[in-house]
Length: 66
Image (cartoon, rainbow, N blue to C red; front, top):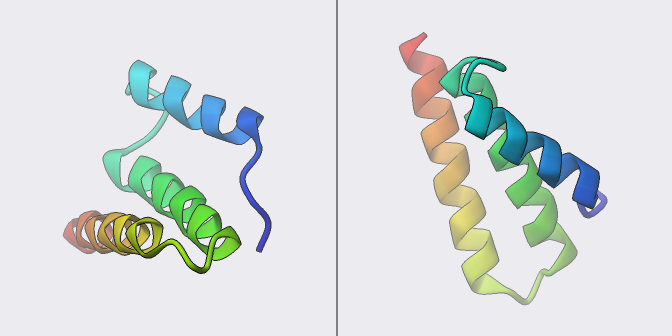
């Protein structure tokens, strides 16, 4: 798993600002993916892993809610 690029992070932030670029579930899934990639690139960073896990849990909740 590779670290997200600045372009990927910028695109996600722009989509969050626009809010019309996708559903909340889709945006949270993208956010969780990026955070998981950041955490994977820094295996000793416990906080990064916790943040990524929380984001994935929220994305899964939103996906389950439809």
